[in-house]
Image 1: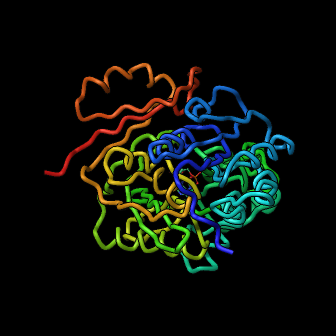
Image 2: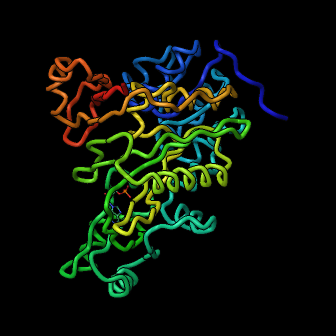
Length: 359
Ligand code: AMP
């Protein structure tokens, strides 16, 4: 039986208390929905703006049960939420996107195998399960190459670029996981991402590709739209739509891609949730990525992805946040702070989107 449409006034459960949950709750609140966050720490960025919060560990089944009983639909804001917790909540409540999508994207090998099964190109890769296998793969792939942990990898965690001088034992130790994936290094012209939204009725919308610049593996700046050929942009959007349809996604999905020097598009990573590279949509588009997620999970029609401004989004990482006043002196800059009190190096504290309005 098809799930009923959830009208405003219903409660959306959000697994994860970070800034993506915060901005989802802000979009939901504007549409008249309530949000209940499940977070592992009190006073989380999402918890600060949700009417209700459950603070517990993801292994606490009684807490998950209470959370599920208090909400009408469940989504998640972080792809490393333990899959068992999501499955458990899914027994009593509709979870969107589906738990299986989360399981595919939590595992780099499953994700890449899935992409290949639907004819989507990635960098060459190989599973490596011990040092000897890594040494063989390093010889076969040549240099540079990239070793990544299969699980819990984001913002460059568990990742290392290998050169001819790199000792396989050291690389293995640095990765610190039981299984890794060795990838050939892509000499990319630029990195882009496409965010695709898909509703319960299969309707879809893709935002234009944006260009992502990383510092120390963490997203630093997003330029929207990406400065790429129109034909490349169309191809990237078509790839994102194809993946969303094959996953039977309901929600939003970010597809991170490399554009090679030859103009080919290779998919690097999937995230079945709002994405840092989509923050510009809050201020520059008719409908933000967060509102699309709310609309999709509640069974509402998607909104327009048209943008009235181009934009440059800059993350405020670590102590960058101390310069928040600078953003306010620029009338075209929109400041977003996530309510995190403790500054740590590499921690995303907020972002600033500078708008370049279309005339
Ligand atoms: P990931 O954790 O897979 O999202 O990787 C983080 C960042 O590392 C990417 O955004 C790229 O800048 C870089 N990177 C990852 N994989 C590769 C690769 N195979 N070739 C070149 N750069 C890579």
